[in-house]
Length: 248
Image (cartoon, rainbow, N blue to C red; front, top):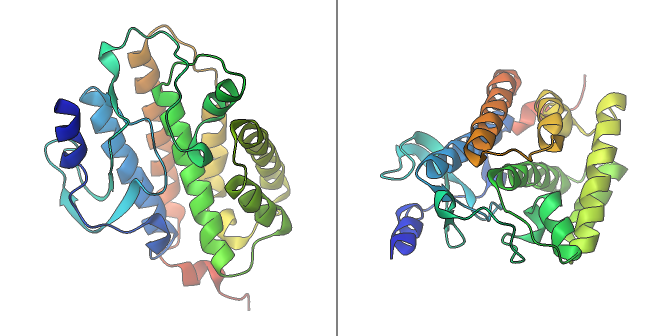
């Protein structure tokens, strides 16, 4: 009953998908507020375990989400159907995997493919936010028919990855190619404006998350993610037209 109550308490508001954001600032602000919601759930003892683009949603106007999120923002995390009370776990790896393959962390899809037990932690949920961001941005750019060749490949391969093995391979390849393109700056305009954020967050998701205390892990990772959001937001244009306008 407690789990069901929690689920409905965070999913009553009519919302829009991230692709409906009016510009880069609104897009990243929405994801940031979604992560704050996720953090407050975490502080309340819940780990969502299924962060995806259908659950990271934009609110039409900022509002207070009580009692779970305790934040006035433009985003909420919906559908806590796979959420668990992480403080009550025995913290032993399990063979069951939770999440949506397109947005699952590389660790989760890798262990899923190899049939190995895994402990789903906050690190996996937070990596899912990166895949939500990348897929959301690539989808917005795809609608305008101006992705680079690599970006079209990333989006197509990610969407069609299917099983855990291909998903793991494609995600590792995507991150590797993304790092190379960050250096060469061979990116479409929409990704270029997010370079500071992506540059700051990639080392975070590549860090070894094996620590003795899950509480320590959560505190550390949320702090790093929040810093990346706060560093990047002031640099972002407010509208997509500012990003996509033709050079003079």
